[in-house]
Image (cartoon, rainbow, N blue to C red):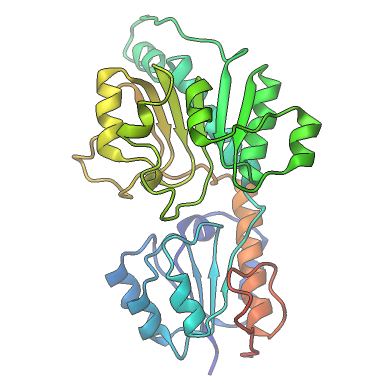
Length: 327
């Protein structure tokens, strides 16, 4: 019987590239769905698959319990595993693979797209001219502004480099600090998040979603930021408390919020952030360029194939789980 592989990420399916040919060349049976999937939708698909390339589907303990023992490999298309029960993957002996280092350039560019759109009033101006008008609003320069970067991993570093190119003053905060990179580019390290919040004109979030970072930006921490701060989020929606952010935007305490992620994706029509004039929301496309999708998809396929053949994958979240040959 041929191995059966479930693929649910839409950008993987919709973007041309070598990943399609490489996966097809295995001769394995492919089952596709349009993610991200809810727990119920994922449960309906996982019982009879040997490998799974997932995006931001809800891969809960219940899903993994149904998927085993047939599911041998879970290959995450991307780097964020907050929607996956990593502990249960490890307990059940399922290797969880991921694709670090494939989209940092693209996400950093997207952060600046959001920032420039807010500071130059892009949507207001394009809406005006498209409706036959010529209304204008005065914007702001990025030059010499301080941007606080929360999370100085691959993406945070790329944001810092672009900030320097704009003549900005990047300040970083991370528990794990790359001294060599910071020294090479003259990037100071904030002594604490409160220190970063107090000095930044802009705050860009590039940290993982954990118990510690959930609701990192909330009423209490917003009060420690500069008045009229602009906040950017290309990480996870749950890092920002939605109700507190909406209140701060309405009051003007936060001048603008540019986000590629929300706490509910896709959002309901009543979501408090999607219709505010000083909030720009994009539909989780920060890493979706042809170049990054192809890199990410090829890495996810390579991970899957290597693991199914018992070979070492490119990157594994739970390396303590041995990779066993399936085919």
